[in-house]
Image 1 (cartoon, rainbow, N blue to C red):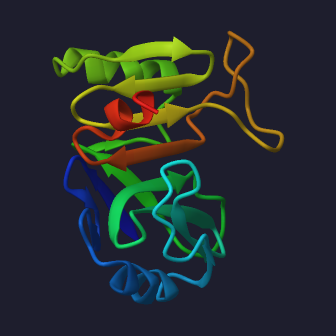
Image 2 (image 1 turned 120 degrees about the vertical axis):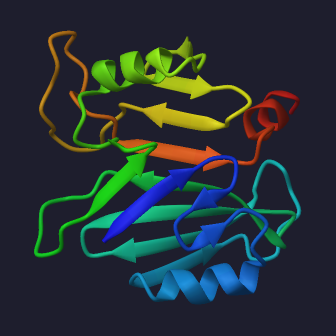
Amino acid sequence: MDIELDPPNGITGFPLGMPAEAVKSAAAELGRTRVSNEGSISKFRPMKVLALHPQFEIVFHIKDGKTLDAAEVWIPQPGPEEITVRFRGIDVFRTPALQLLEQLEAMGLTVLHDEPNYWTVPGLSLGFTRVAGHEVPLDTDGEPLYFQAILTGSTDYYDELGNG
């Protein structure tokens, strides 16, 4: 399975702006699903659809309880299926995190590092985290070697969050 991150358009099979019911149906094709805050219009407790594939998870953020606003893909785990997540040809979960950041900057993208373990590409609305909930290989800086999750959202996704 190949998943392409295509901000600000979405990810493979899940274009941003997709209706919530269509997200739930398509997510169910990936594995089990769990919906939280069904129909919520709250900015602070948005509706989310969690797709639980046996080897990875994707959290779909539903704006105003109606349309897909962001997709957060978690690092695939080893298993029977070959799963690759790419951004502009780069395998984002098999490229060491610090090297990936260098490659993004070499593409002319601005990468912000405002919080420990979190990076964003403003305007493009890509967000990266190295925070891991389990034991993972570490880099020389003592942090996870690979990003653990990557979010792609609408063009102003991070701007909207910051305006609280």
